Image (tube, helix red, strand yellow):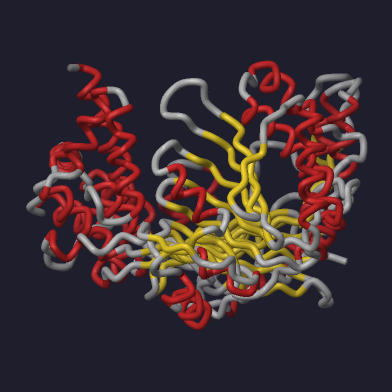
Length: 599
């Protein structure tokens, strides 16, 4: 009984994030609308040319990552390796020593050896991509056939690929017989000893390599589709979905991806709504009784309707490259991920939380982090969501259980906690330079000898906030900060090489040290609270960061581990800056990550 309750709680936690964003849902759909013709009805067909790889992807896949055109893989790997330095003596085998000792099956040993060989090609660049028989710019498609993930990649030389896999087998001390179906050749490597039988499938035809995780349900049909012997009745190529996503999000055609929330819900809540659902039905009897019971509850009409309503509001997660410029000055690789939402009421509430997060992307920072949060809107937003969720009429037992738990919480307490910060719109920290003094003795804490930084607080009335915070930090009570932006010294409880200065610059209370800190502080004078870069921003320069981190570590110990020292020395040469952003927009929750070469 206790185990059954535990399973319910686990599943409740799994669905909590979806519940919190399920307000303002569409009307329930009839079960007949859910039971569409599954894409697993297949027909025998000739193997398509690599350019038609999408013809082999079923349109009911729960995820897809790939492209409409070849990706410059060789160039991309070289770009990564040249900007993210790794020590030449670093041996990935050391990472898996303990794991390798526990590897019992052929599949487990093959996966470990494949990772080691992949590292030598992708990171260390000691084994050319050509040794795998892969095109310099291949077509790539990663997707799911039901619950079985598949990776398909076009080849330049299928015989070289077979030879490489045989080489990996020899290193892993694994031997298995090849299976054929016409001109399609593949091998099975068992990953599990017990039921359900899970296998790693590696196969090839004359044009593509295929990696697949066979979960032990509909195995032969799934393998036939994965290796290209058969094609789905309706494919991703037929749907035009990737073309629509590319146009909507301005994505580079070489890499477009999505996770289909509707297909996942259909797979969990129906018996034959898609290929995933059929696989789940075959696997559930092999699961522990408590887990099987939980799946049965998910397939009640109440859960099916409730979860489909949530998926209507949050249909998919989309991602891909927005810039793939490996030869530019500077070269860069930009990406975006969007959790799409159709729930306008909730999105409007989330967008009301947007405060001010400064943009220091053009500044020479080691590290910068900004949180743009309109503090006075946090409590009203949480109260609104809590009220809507606790008043909803749910029919799914898991959602009812979560609803009862939420009713016991009191979001009004958040209002009390945020009362002292009324008017705050955001906070940000930028570190431009930090040099540490080597301590006299081993193990002593190093102290800063040079600091260049900025701490800023965006607010409607910065001086009023200083008075509020004086109760928690007494030195502020006697601090007289001019309203005209003139800086004054800020007394500190610890010794610093330079006394921090504090000043009001426009709508920003700034505390800074050093030349760059002062310049960035003054630049905020013209930044309005409505000019935010998002709910959160971050930037890190890998070379500068690891230079600082390496010095800090070296000061703590007399003797350093050779591998640790080599890692830090290599990362100091990483010529890369990464900028990240989180925001709430009319499309949903958006996350961006830009990788920019610094030389």
